[in-house]
Amino acid sequence: MKTGSTIATDAAASGTKFRLLDLSAWSLSLGLHVAALLGLSLIYFDVEQHLTTVIDSVFDDADPNQFKFDATAVDQIGNDSSVNTLAASQAAATAVGKNPQEEIQSQIDETLDVQVPSPNDIVEPPKAEMLSQVATTGGTEYTGGVEGSIDRLAFEIANSLREKKTLVVWLFDVSPSLSVRREKIADRVENVYGQLNTLNVGSDKALRTAIGVFGEKTSMVTDDPIDETADVVKAVRSIKSEESGKENVFNAVLTATQRYLTYRTKQNRAMMIIVVTDEAGSDADKLEQAIQLTKRYGIKCFCVGDAAPLGRQKVEAEFTLDNGETVIGVMDRGPEGYFQDRLNLPYFGVNGGHLENISSGFGPYGLTRLCAETNGLFLVGETGMSAGIDPIIMRSYAPDYRPIKMLETDIQANAAKRALVGLCEKARVESIPVPTTFFPAENDNVLRVAVSEAQKPLAVLDYRLDELLQGLQVGEKDRAKITEPRWRAVYDLALGRVLAMKARSFGYNMMLAEMKSSPKKFETEGNNSWRLVPSKDIASGPATKKLAKQAEELLKRVIDEHSGTPWAKLAELEYQTPMGWEWKEGKYNPQPAGMGNGKDKQGPRFEEVVDPKTGKKIKKMIGGPPPKREI
Image 1 (cartoon, one colour):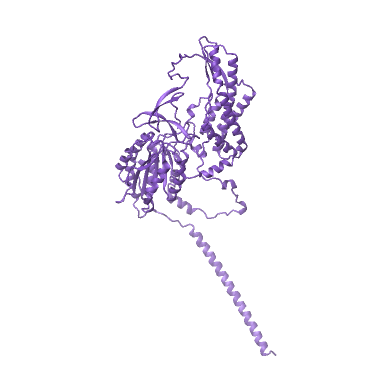
Image 2 (cartoon, one colour):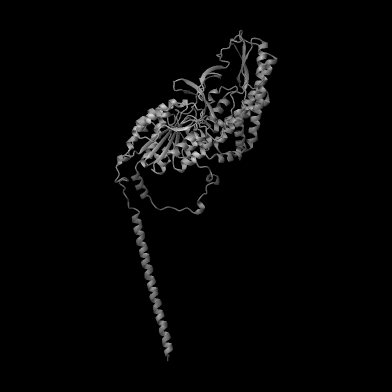
């Protein structure tokens, strides 16, 4: 017989059992419903992925004519130029698809079945690649001379006006050599500004322009920014040449920025500075300050200038004065990098004088870096590059535009770079003599005197060449560590040229010694002179042959590894010229003593020129016709 306690216990147990059964049923029901909902959601998701969205227009309410710009102002970008490639900034602007609606439709229709790779399958990029230098935006563009450069600037100004009102500040170099360029710009601006003014809307004109000039000091031609095209052209034409002898271009950029900064900060206008010059600037110490100020306020800097000579600061160039007279001046146009990295070696036994002013293909370091750091462009106001130089290939040989302190640290870390830069700086101030190859020989005594005079500079020549050779060879241990193609090219070319000149010097000295001890006899009656000319036959011993072989190997490496560059062009000239010597007899008309008139092709001649720095007429001694200009 169950007691009351037992009955109560049984009842409790039974109730618990029923509750457990109810909970299991509820859980089962919940699971089935959740599974059903998940299934339905998957079906809905699959259908959703096949829906398409049609975009009719991104400017439903805007007036399309508001964004139109007459392309005639920029149709001629690249005219008269051998370079028809687009720079990075322009290439990006033209990379948009032809039909954005079709591209969006195609992307939506793509399957979403993406296979996620296993972490073990993902290849980590090399550390060197992750730490490599990223190219700075901006750079040098060839646009077909001054006219093409102005058209390119019109493109940039128009793009700026589409976004916001814009102030353009033109800064003109007042050097006499810029007179022709200023006139060309005035002619082109008149047409271009007529197109740009179609974007001027409202009483407060969208485009305003200020004109300034600089030499040793900076001054503004326009007191306040102007609006009308005629006023802009009149201001440019009113600029007169000055002969200050200095081009403080970075101070001009600082002055213009500070003067018109309120247009940027208070009026919220875009601001562009356009420098027009043909030199590198005399105040490089203010470069960093100019970069910092313009970058801080988002001011783009552009320059219409000349390409720098390869690896050198100065270049001889012809230019036309205001009065139409053409003269030769020494211009500071380079170098294209911060360091001068091209040895100042003369051409001994090689007809290479026309390559002394060979172009680097880039603007001078300071101005180009200012443009690059501010997302502007250096536009070359010349009509092309030297024949045989490929502008596409040259993009891989762009100078290093990092800050100066970083460049100096990099140089000190590599013995080859350090040696080359140091020797280039020393060779710039210590000239290397070039022995004569012409010897009068009316009789043996005259010949011996001429040979003796020719032997005198050989001691200096050999000393300088030994100094250069030993210095470069000290850095040769780090040559293999150089990764930049530009530095490999400049180092190999320098060492190859020094070895070639050393081989020629050895052979030259031996040929003179033999001629002095045993003068050669003329085979043709009436001849009265001897000339040393290049020969494949190296008859001056095994030491000379060894030097010639080493030189040929280095020069050939430059030609093969850096084809299409100016370094390859210079190396090819040396490589194709034999390094031995042979005598060639000839005839010349000796002048009576004291009757030299400077017109003898074998000797120097004098030409009256105007010093571009002082404006005074001077007589300049040159060894031949004015240098052929390579651009």
